[in-house]
Image (cartoon, rainbow, N blue to C red; front, side):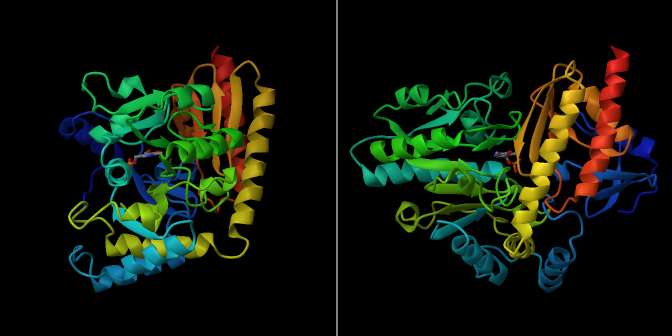
Length: 406
Ligand SMILES: Cc1ncc(COP(=O)(O)O)c(C=O)c1O
């Protein structure tokens, strides 16, 4: 429905009709192109958040948009009891561009995490029918989604408060603590699930050694190693898949966010010998693998794997990290650390994270704050060095303003 409401009226109407579960920024988006967004009042912004790491090719990428529009004109949905060409093409591309043999689709990240939990338990029972192995080891500060299984896997107490008891069968250990992880294994453990670069938890990554040791630990104990690359996958680290960066091959890979070109789409990629643990009827979803979203996914994979694309992501990502570190050096009183990889960076402030986000927005830069005071930079992978310079220019003003306030 077309509305003629002003920005203020939309914000007031939202407050009246929505139960409040988001602290929204006071802006109503109208449209986007590349890494630029315009609000309803015509103000232009540079976007370094990409709608929670979703718009990896930027807004309105011509080839991705055309592919999605073409599918939309044919049909928006028919359901999973029939064959869908764009969905099959995406499964083939995901297999060809990964370690996997088989793919399953769902809608959101949380849903594909649920499927991974089911798969791990079913696989363990198929492999060792005598044992009842259901425990999954996950990591503190990781984020796996908002459904009960995914939240139970999420090692952050703040998300469990008031909705407990959480589902049994999850043990949370500390990232990069190998001895702690190994000692959490019992005769009930079936899998280890890790977010290789924690996004929501404040941009923390596993070390290469830790990830390789995890692989070895899983092999020795016959556990599935599940990588949740819903945020850090599909080019975000500068590799197509984050696991390539660590030179570790997981047994199960979870993808989401950018996969559907802005529409909900998630995927589980695994080997054939693991996938056989699931039988007809074990998984289903009305919308999972929607053909319009799958058309967006095919265009995304084509772009990401085009010659030179990821090399440029790596180069610009190193530049972004370097510029943020230089800025941090200028504001040592405010900044604890800059850390990240590819197009996924965090600047941890001592304080004032949320007000820094608001100030940046006022100056035309869209960023986010997570884990209390970590400013999160997740630009489109197509961002240019000039756009990085402009973002850093605004961030310098933001940090100067915080200094003045103190
Ligand atoms: C690593 C990771 N896993 C899972 C999820 C959940 O995805 P969704 O919000 O699509 O359910 C997220 C969302 O931020 C995520 O970052």
